[in-house]
Amino acid sequence: MLSSTAAKRICPSNTARAIPNAGVRQTDAGAGSVIYRDPAHLRGPLGLVLTPDGDLITSNGDAVNANKHHPSELVEFNPTTGRFVAQFSLDSASGSAFGIALAVFDGQIRFAAVDDNTNTLEIWTLDG
Image (cartoon, rainbow, N blue to C red; front, side, top):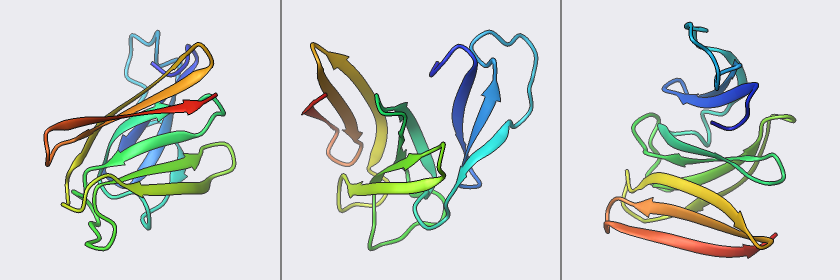
């Protein structure tokens, strides 16, 4: 759960959507509203995390709109402005980016991404 009032999710149409009150809903809210659409960078996104500065990072599974020049990417975007921020290829093999997680400990950001091709977990520690 990303917040108590709304959750973000990634859909096969290469969009991220917000669902109001997702953390407490007991009824279907449908597909939610589009907060980000980007077929140039979202390619079958799987995981989704919220960064401390409000950006979202997703892992591309390359199931939709795969691009051999940009395989297994982690893509950061700002859902408020709708702007693409950055991308990073986790592995040169298509379909390798999988689960992702982010946590803050003692002012340091720890970001982790699963590389499904090498069956490894990459962990980065960043200053907060």
